[in-house]
Amino acid sequence: MTDRRLWSYKDIAAHIRVQPDTVRSYRKHGLLPPPDHVEGGRPYWYADTVRAWVASRPGNRGRGAG
Image (cartoon, rainbow, N blue to C red; front, side, top):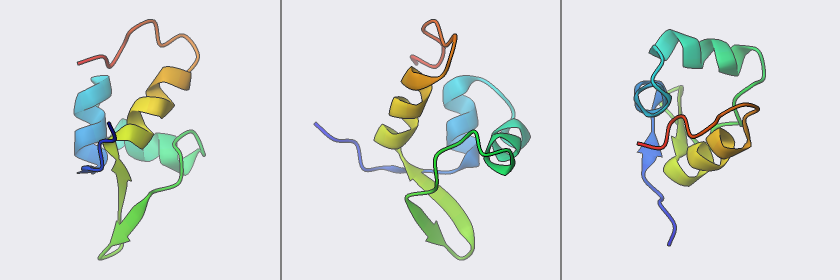
């Protein structure tokens, strides 16, 4: 089953338990996958994209499982 909900910086931050500015920094430094969608200049990612990224992060040890 695919999860095609679009997530903002705020949604990603809540998922991995950091501040939205941290997620923006990840993107700025190339640590976040490219956005799946851009609307009004704002980037959005599919929930599945974010979950795959979280699973592939070094040392994630179950973080962001919520």
